[in-house]
Structures are given as C-alpha cells and as structure tokens.
Image (cartoon, rainbow, N blue to C red; front, side):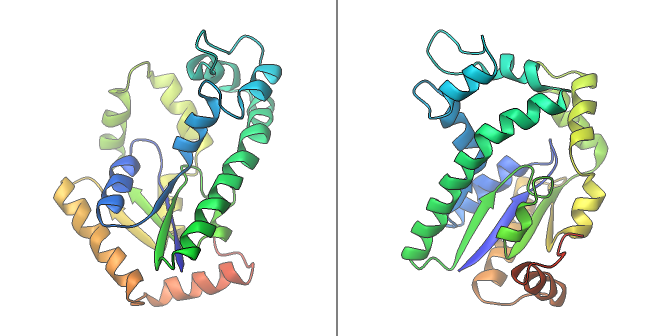
Length: 218
C-alpha cells in the first residue's frame, strides 16, 4: 500500500484537493477533522486542553477554538503544550486509519496533514504531494476568511515552511491557480501513476530515503 502525504501552505487549496481525492476513490485521513472531533463536546482532548488552558471551554462543553487560538498564537511555549496534548491523539487515529486500510488491501491512501513538513511527518509517507498557488492568489483567498487580518496571516506564514521550499521537497506538485477542472486533472494523473506504479525517478529516490530513515526532506 502506498501512503501519499498531502500538504500545502494556508490558502493553497488543500481542502479542495482533499475533496477531489475522495471523489477519485482514494481513502483519506483528515488530521484537521480529527482535531475538530477531539475538541468538540465530549471529545477526548477537551478535559486536558481545559486543564492546560483554563476558560477556553464553551457553553456546549467543547473547546472554543477561536479563544484557544488566541491563547497560543505567537506563543511558542503554549503552542508546544497544546501540540503535546493533541498530536499523540491525532497520531493514534492516523495509525488506526492506516491499519484498517491495509486490512482492506487498499492500493493507495492519503494522509491530509497541514504541517506535514513542519512536524516531521514525511517519514510516515512514501510520497508527498504539495498544493501550490501564486502568492497574490494565496493572499486573496486567505484574506477572505472570517476574522483574518494581515498580521494574523503574516504570523501563520512565519510558522509554516515557505511554499518554494515545500515544492522543492515534494514528489508531486499540484497547481491550484487555474480551475477546479485543471486541479482535478492533475490529481487524477498522480493517482493513476501511483496506483499503477509509474513513478518518477526522483520520487523513487525519495521513497527509498524515507523508508531507510534518511534525510528525504532535507
């Protein structure tokens, strides 16, 4: 079974790409969706997060993500504390997803992880797909989001590996600046290549390095 990591900086079209991969019949693990469930009312992380960050729980019994974000944004120590709670839970969910897919003999699965490079997650993937778009389009997309500001956008970019470096480290790059049809066509071609073993020489090299524990994303 091939494990394809899907990632990309904010505003690059990763969520759209993830939905398209599902349409193409590829099982996909959504790390963000898992975090949402962990922080929802009754979620497994609610008690620990509330203990670490008092007064971030909402009236429904879940975690107010906006309030929590304000507590950790620009605070590296607080962010590390939050990641120490959430990351092991997300990782456990990911392991379960992969195990179930192997049991079904799936030929290909996708791990949709926003900070795949930043968290050292490439070692769990055979290949990495990065979605990308020009900076001007990226900024326009992000600034349309509710509650977004220029300062917040700059802070998010600062915490992420620059897009040119992500593209350099990727096995596959999908450009989302044209149309949805063009994006789907690019994704479909990549899925077919992976399902049928038609891999570029560079991807084979990186895949071997990752499996050997080498510096595949260095």
